[in-house]
Length: 390
Image (cartoon, rainbow, N blue to C red; front, side):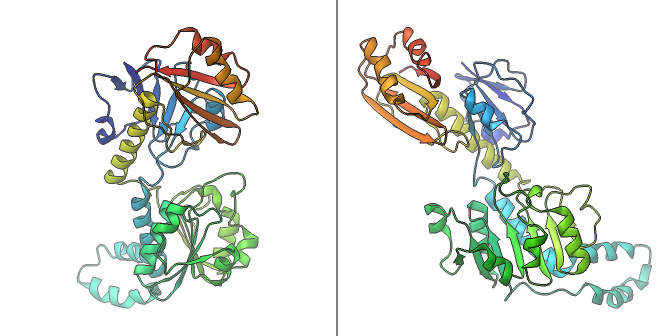
């Protein structure tokens, strides 16, 4: 029986993938083989030697010690694209909220409570202060063309906007999904100089921290509207507040309120609702569960953030899965361990990613000598080896 520990409330749509005959799943599970998590902080947690995988039901993995997991041979999965439509819809809503001054208008309307029959006249008298432009015919810049960014591009184009997209690492899949009418620029400065709206969809890391700062904002069009539904730290709060005060930026829409932005003039703060839809939670949970099951039962890795993607069909025999350092002569050392005990390798698949690599070895034999794993883990550079029996 595999043991699956759930750190947060995981959608039943995901949990139903676990066969009750093979898996024990729950919040009280001890010594888990895998963990399913949403937003629970894991950086201070100690992991048992049994733990093979952590699956984040969502895209961001800032709550997981990804590098430490790699060192301990724990594969960390996420679910890119599973919540993309939910975030895309909220970004489009953010465009409209920022243009039509809807939040301020709603506050004004609520302030009329108790005015009785005078309300219609007060509405007509006060509505002029909330006039805002239509988005049709305006130019939107999308920084980051992953699953969400591509959807935002296509949706905004369908609403009559001119759309510029920037991503130096545009994947083949994203390129196919991107509408031909989107202008793919190779220079992010084109977006800063030419766009009425700028929306950010990149991961947060040391290189992207405060990518929207005072210097960048100074190159943008006067009155630009900036949207951030990716990570709060991508935008320098002090710079954005100063730009709002000067009028350089008309509106800042963020899904990550904090002590500086809440209540600030010109800020539309949304309480992290990007992926908060039942459909998104179901999709993320299902994707996470399926990936964990495939890894535990078959050794296949899909959508890992700390290991390479490696998948291979089973041939009916035992399968050996090896996480190791990406250093010279590793495969020689691995194959030598098999030769020493007289086992022939039927198939071998190997991929690397940064400092680590992952090797799948299939055998004809259905049974594997107990000493094999010990021999493999004694090889310098091998982090973890395990056997998946036929």
